Image 1: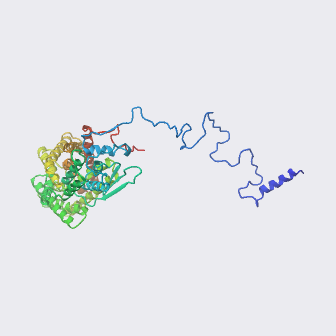
Image 2 (image 1 turned 90 degrees about the horizontal axis):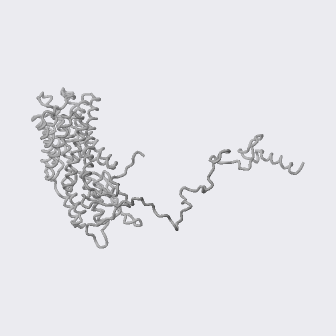
Image 3 (image 1 turned 45 degrees about the horizontal axis):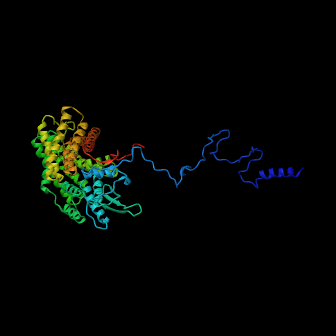
Length: 550
């Protein structure tokens, strides 16, 4: 036996000896074909017999982040420029500041034109903290007054650019305002925020804030920081234009006008007005004791329902349902609903969700107050018919007059300026005329009729606001009052009080559909009005580019 043959058995024995090998050793008697390649291969290896031919000129595979072989840092290729050139950012100078600021907010930061300061600043530049503080205070008043989040951001952006602050990013949520300013990419950003603690409806104060922002953005009107602070302090200290007794009287007249819209007569008008005024005084009493708005709405909804049930129990020949429906009109949160849907349609989903949740809580409070009264009224023998449809098509002139009175009183409740009350009253009359013509003459569905009428309200309101360089809310909110779904809400609650839950839910779903039609119609009408306005933009980027399902 040669020396090589003597070594071979020993090698095989060493290979299969369990003492000197691991548990991964090849079992005895199993032959493994040997080749030139390694026995251990990756699962990503190309199987034997499968060839992946490559062209002769193919380059070796590299990382996705490695530059091409033809690239050189010393001789870098020129940047790509479209054949038509880079679009020039141009803004219409005579357009309202809302449109110009909204256009720039929808652009990337790097594509916005450099600010042209229109207000006097100190020699060393504007006092950045003071400008940001002034911006937040203005945004707080606008947001607390019920303005949409997009318009609040546009106003904040306009104030910063008026004092020469570039690269500013405002951010608005339901109760929080913040703004960040970064002079350049190498400087630290300055960020400030402010929380909205109290919210109240005062469109006179809202209009004054809009005039202040308009003066700040006007190159011919020079307003220093001290002057802007002084005017802002006067706006905050201004008293409401209407006293408390006028608001209570307006609440009663609104409920009476709404009862006439659903078929009421003079007695129903008086009964609905008295019930609404009692509810308003009870709500003021609860507010003075510090109760949340949910309980205020619950208490305010009880007196009109109680008066309607009492008239039915007394067998008075009046339409008790019209009394209760009129009282509901004075409580439905149409302003918050329109603002919430508008924020959702413009991409402010957090603010929209919060506002719609607030509307839901108010609506639940109204439902609770009316349901309690209706439940006990049915139990003690009140004969209220949930299938009784309101008769409103045989008195068109009276209905139009009632709708105009409803819009006028709604404007007073919103504390509007006296110069805007006439316009919003006419707008409300036009809205009801269009709705009545489509619904009762053309026999079109109530949702479509409501949407078209609300669209005209938004269109006319937006055009009037641009003509007067003011907010669109005073011209639209009160005008949608006659379109609010008071009767559908009442009949749904009455059906639920009489244990007809299915029928009640159907009626409440109809009320929700009408409310959404109002909100979407108002916003759509406002957007359609922009077709008649000259608004500059960057090339074809006329609106925010949102996701489209991917």
